[in-house]
Image 1: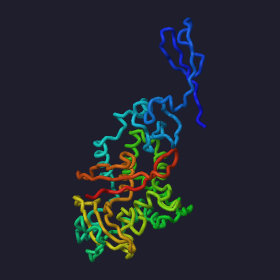
Image 2: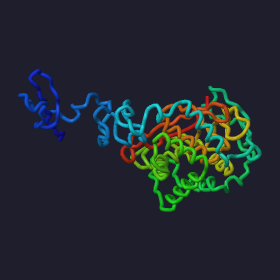
Image 3: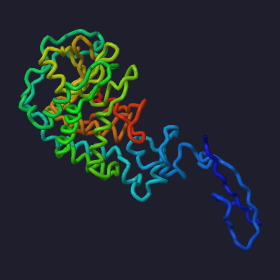
Image 4: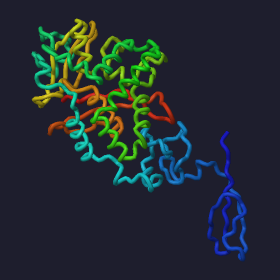
Length: 371
């Protein structure tokens, strides 16, 4: 039941009103006054349901249009004026909002810190047929050879690669089938997160987000990474059958089509096994070194992907970090970055049907936009 709050409206002899909670307050002890009690719901005291005026640190409620508690920024649910009213001491709109220019700068920093990326002689790709826009949906194999002519698999012995690859067989690709996560698989998630957090790239990302007051400690950041990427939710039939990590990096099959699957390592390993058949590409990025970007068409065990964009030759921590940056800074919209002097955009989407913590959002998908 919605409780009602008594609001005492005190009027002085000149008719001026000053509202206070309760009934024992007097504007001037020596002046007569009369008190009228009005009963209002707490929500009626707020000037606007989409404002934080008077609502700072109000407990989270999923019924609210937006929120004003200290966690709202990390779950992307703050009211438009949260910075003005609620974070004056620790969070200023001029200093802590992430500008477009800062995204360009920090993405170049992360690009330069990808020390585990493939070198030019580590990978040889054979893109073959370039599909016109009206050809991507035809499901025609116009490339007789595999996409990957050569990959130096010594890359995969590096700790972030090895721990990443161990995660890829932990999922059922069909949506609608509940994922059963074992203790061993949970440990593999922890090892991967620990390994990526050892890298200069992820330390730079944390330092940037810490400076922007998104996280107070590296441990808080690591725990949130685990929830936003590995937390399970349902894409179909009510079962907890999916996660951001599974969708983006491992790939899923939904309604007879490939869904997600934006990782080059996963593609290479399945192509090597004969489970992925490369058809064509519709976009090749301007980079003459790695990471590069490719928009491609392929089938996975008979299921088709019309346009599957992917970074080629980056380390797992680079892709994981870049997508995380954009999910936090520009959730649900294009995130414009700069890599090696070339512009690139990342699209992320939040999962809106369930949350974790105090209403934080899971990652639904993240991918590089190919024109």
